[in-house]
Image (tube, rainbow, N blue to C red):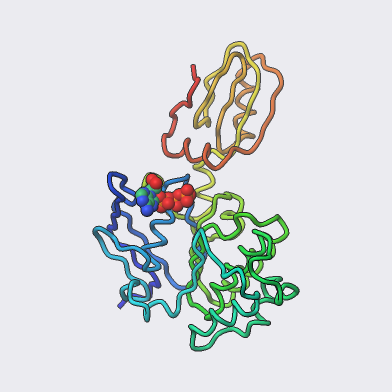
Length: 297
Ligand SMILES: Nc1ncnc2c1ncn2[C@@H]1O[C@H](COP(=O)(O)OP(=O)(O)OP(=O)(O)O)[C@@H](O)[C@H]1O
């Protein structure tokens, strides 16, 4: 029997004609915080739904704590927050925590859990009267009520303001330091970079990459170098480029290098800006290296 908390081996899953997961394999060893990163429709939620026993794979093997995740007893050491959660609107926050805690043998006391997640002052508030961000925080807190060994979070901080997001990051780091394991998806590259010690990149239902955040960061085109030039140059280090009129947009991972190359090329240019790309752009470039975007030359 392996020590891995999760084993996914050659797993495929389709929805009609859509192949959401295509021969995916990866494992979650104890004590890791793993980020699953990928553009919309990459298959992230589908993968988590197989691991948490909500859906079944068409082929391949999914093991949770060395057993079948569809068996409820197998999930007592698992905590999870899916992408969409419905809280009973008429129950008070502390009642929701107590209700969920009763499903576990040794739940964290409600007041302690709410304190940890910065929700103590809302204990008597009806769940339906909380803001979207507060509801999200409660939904994530509930994943921890049963003292899980593994927590699976699908876009945990979507809808939270910056302060709430950073507070949650601290809670996740503490849980991780105390020996817990976390598998999380996010649309925020920054979030994965801040938290994960390992990143699994999914695109089109396939694992494109699996490694440390630094190695992955070097591969995605996370920066945009934009300028106006009459004759756009070919520069090394550029992952994709787009030209509209005389405006040139270059996507790259190392913008300092590309700016140096631009200056060194002797090209006459003006109006230079350097900015972050969106995650979608970053991944478009990763999934089709050296492929030019629409409107190109
Ligand atoms: N219940 C379903 N019925 C039909 N198609 C589905 C279903 N669930 C997912 N899909 C499709 O499977 C693919 C993968 O979807 P999935 O939700 O796993 O992606 P994702 O990476 O989580 O995307 P997002 O970041 O937008 O949440 C998409 O093409 C999606 O449209």
